[in-house]
Image: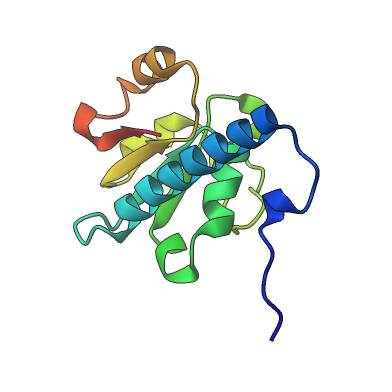
Length: 135
């Protein structure tokens, strides 16, 4: 059995590059752990993903099948994304008004930016602010 080499040590990186890469790898791992913790909560069975971004696709692709089943709705404000399928899951993307017609436990906001704007746009569809989870 071959011993795995550290990926970062295989290439001639500058010291600052290694610091940057290590910091971002750690940040990504924290985000992934936070997302997995949300999905593993027993109380949380019905999850909505809002904001069909690269982050939403990443979440769907790293989740195991048993946790992926908890995703009941994908939604986005962008009309061009409505009725399209998101890569990695056989679900259509809907307008957030669909939130009014379903029961859900949490809405995970799949964006690092525009948090205030997103929260304001969802006020009319989400009764309890505690249901909104920002990554």
